[in-house]
Length: 348
Image (tube, rainbow, N blue to C red):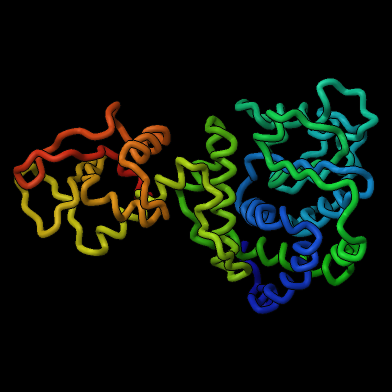
């Protein structure tokens, strides 16, 4: 059902609300907000592939941060969780809605393994769990978390005391809360209409892939949403949050598209001539010449020393290079040259 025109939130109003709600949040939690904003933006179009655990003591501001995430994610009122257990938390899930659980892992809990580790293990499993269903799952507590669990999710460890009580109070002020909830309504209306990278969505939604790779793709898509809606234009490139292998494959795709725009041609037969042959193409594959593409890939990646071997390795690990060796011989314009055999899916 479409939104009546009279109810559509103007972009200018959303940007004003963004400043009111996000500026205090950024001042209070400067090291965490950028990543969280992208995760929340993604959660308005699909479920974030990993949970967000906020660890800190009673006065750290963890509950304040969790409530702010709930404001931006569009948290709905729900019955209180009967008991702080994995089964109790799973029963509180409303598919497609945020799940914010404050004090899910209290230090007084005798659960072994600890609650954070139990919850992370439940979400990490490839098989379906109800904890995969929230748009974003946030839990707070002051229990420790194992290094392995912490490395596979968004883990925010807060100092025992905030830098300033004033900034925490600003985050919880009525104007800031109202601003974040207004932004949530705007994202709910508009995020689904943003043309988000199909490959990023595919990676983020693929439960059998490495969780950090899925998270990187989700953050990339969230960044696209924020940029497209002019809510935030960060100074860092959008690809910096991607998994290192995906940063390289994105650079290959960008370079290939740029080469084609400049007039590079992909021929279809061994002896076909072209003004600037950069490779060949058939129904399923692109046969790209590293000799033609390397400098453009390095420029897109921002690394002038990126090697052909490193590029081939990333393409292979992401299942885009369909050969066991880095390059294979192929005839282009009647001459034998070395090419990468890359799946056409790289172009999206």
